[in-house]
Image (tube, rainbow, N blue to C red; front, top):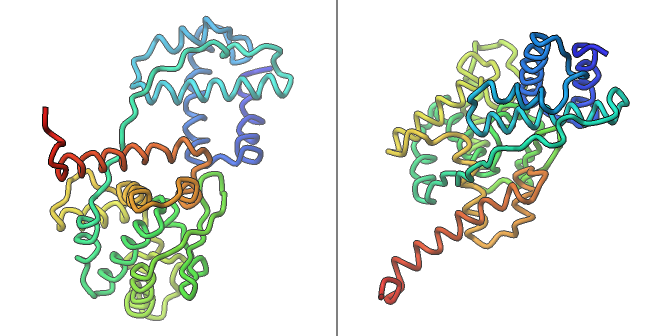
Length: 297
């Protein structure tokens, strides 16, 4: 079976059976296409390669550890499928060694820093949109893609919940605090109606650009960067920083780890556990600053 023909059912499997996001599938497609091209240059294909061939491919490049780990994950995933589907009897990727990845603790803002940033946008149509967007990103811990995909019917402002589709199109419902609800209400009543040409049909999405179209990822990026800069915060602040801050502040306030996992939409609890390192670090800092014997030798 040729490499190209084997990839077709594999990507269908990822999309419909595994429910992976289009971003993940696109990354895997690039990785496996690159591997297939390398093998073809050596008169091989994906189904005739052995472990030595795969290691030779990986040795040809000096990728960053995270990139290398993703490529190995793509290769392993494909070969597991090939064995499961009967295209291969043995998995040549079985003994590929993954690089050791450093755990980079996410940057979380202080509660005061978040408040300073979220209070800055003015009561103009675009300012009301920006404040509502920032409040939803921090108040519900949404990913940028999730916030951009929100439609009007996804918000229950009476109860204070937002419904979103996360990775793998998995739906979850997240509580929304009173400040976020108030900001969204203000945007819907005084901001959103002013966006776009009068009388023209607007996009059904919650967050729009000045032309009444769906706000783009770059537009969201610029909004977060603008108000972070105005608040005197680090240039690295992003939508993901607000999501990290959401989780960190919940755990620091005593929230249950599994409840935070549900709200973040993490499939694996270990992904959420990284935030416990942040809260432990915060406790150490508080102790060192406040306890009279913290620094006694």
